[in-house]
Length: 156
Image (cartoon, rainbow, N blue to C red):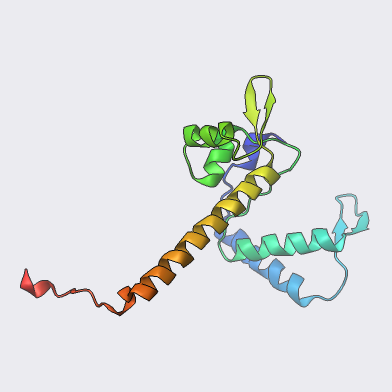
């Protein structure tokens, strides 16, 4: 599978959305083992982890959420990785060069493993949450939450 295909959008038709919701409901309600049936009618039991992943994907899709499946062994390009983090490619490259995110090179091109990218994202999110908690604590101690803004626009 090409790495570019990983980040491609797949539009789901309304009829398919209804089928996904029905599949999800059946998956949640059924207590039997999950099976995979090939086009040649060969039946194989699905491991519980794979079944649970498929059920989670169905749940997310039935709720209208996006789902991305990334293979860890394929390194993401700097464009793909920066898109996943919601930042410019140049800003992302600066993070790589500062050592914030591990990367390797394939020829002259930088590649990032998804595990390293997600580890950075988690560190970034924890840092952001800590800063927000500190801001709330500081403003609460200062009594700023007790001050009501003047939203009366009739004075203007």
